[in-house]
Image 1 (cartoon, protein in one colour):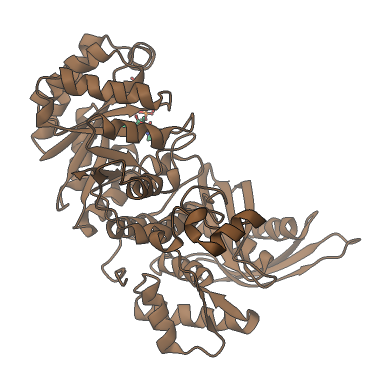
Image 2 (cartoon, helix red, strand yellow; image 1 turned 45 degrees about the vertical axis):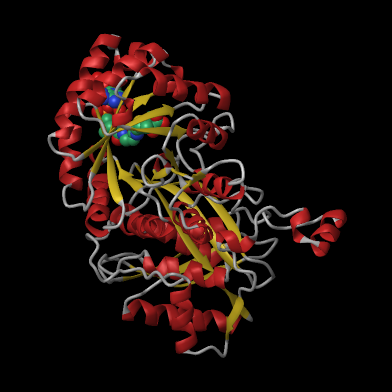
Length: 517
Ligand SMILES: CC(=O)SCCNC(=O)CCNC(=O)[C@H](O)C(C)(C)COP(=O)(O)OP(=O)(O)OC[C@H]1O[C@@H](n2cnc3c(N)ncnc32)[C@H](O)[C@@H]1OP(=O)(O)O
Ligand SMILES: CC(C)C(=O)C(=O)O
């Protein structure tokens, strides 16, 4: 079996998904889970792009010791220097430097000749190697580049010290046959190619990101790049969980293995989906709710007789637990603490106490508290920082009648500790609530998206609200859950506002995640 390295870019290319914006605590939580999932490299961000990204990358480099942490940089000395400042405390720091090589990008975007691009690439890789022990160089838009030019520039950047050469299909344009041919060509024509790892980075614009990545491996790539749930710029990136399971299920045909821990897939997917607000479609391969459901009679009959008739992947393989109805009104602290660990969390004393209180409140209203409910509660508690002052919902009331104008009355605790109370109307209950909250918060708030979903099934299922808004020109998202849709909506609104104003202080070691399985 040949080994294939996995380079995860959920926190960089994944975060480039429109509307996704993660704070430091959320990024670190995902980073810890990626470590458990067994990725070889995680790209934590683009340090030169903003102060927030710089700090996020630095926190991850400081905390994640078992995985190489990378940062992205343009072919610019200042980007490289900033990336080094963010990554230098990491256990295995790595730079990912990119420069476009396609005629379209060189002419219209960079406004450089191929010779100038070649010179810049070589110079910047050489410069980067003075600081970084490992440097990946990406020929952005490689799939629309001239293969002969690629061969020349790759030879130069390897001579300059690049340790990984990535050939991205930046706009998701290529097909498996064509992309495979490109890797074969590069492998056969770059004289020093054996001195570097060859990597594939695919986008899903034509729905072929996973297939293209596999074609690359078949033709010499020994690193694949992708994101959890396939999130990313435009139609997204190759979904790592799909690649991992495809290589595992078809190991009869593909002699490649990765270090990925398949039973961590479900938790990784759930965490990324919750924290980014990017819902996983029901029919998504490997992690969609329907991935293991059988609806039609002939299929059900077949599965009952022998599951292999219609099931190529078992839910257990990817960490989907079959019986998740366990906790209830009569569960005590010991069972609860145990469950918290089973779900992959280790909370500080205070957060554990708060989680238990929230759980108990929920059991008064909901007969069975599922793992999904608990995971939602724990994720919320784990990723909010008690270091920040914030708006807190104290109480609210909504009056609704089919022939009345709905009115919401809300009591809030403001960040300075003062109590605010007011009422407003709206065309519907959520609008009345949001108009009231809006009138209590001084900043200019423009709501751009509102999404409500249920966690699990049944009339008493938890509601989860996701909002996107622009607060004083800052785009931000928020989420909230509750058994009541209005309370979930109010929490999501305030969560977004709090995230816009109050970034948590750098993460302290108090927030540790346990590996329990
Ligand atoms: C394929 C990818 O996914 S690449 C990664 C894309 N990710 C992002 O862009 C997210 C973060 N980006 C940002 O925050 C901003 O774009 C910044 C901070 C990086 C730069 O912002 P600005 O300085 O305002 O520049 P802006 O984004 O408008 O334009 C990009 C500039 O970088 C140049 N550029 C683009 N790629 C590269 C590169 N690889 N190396 C050097 N310069 C580059 C462009 O030609 C343009 O230069 P110009 O100003 O001389 O025309
Ligand atoms: C920075 C590069 C690798 C990229 O994201 C792309 O080309 O899609």
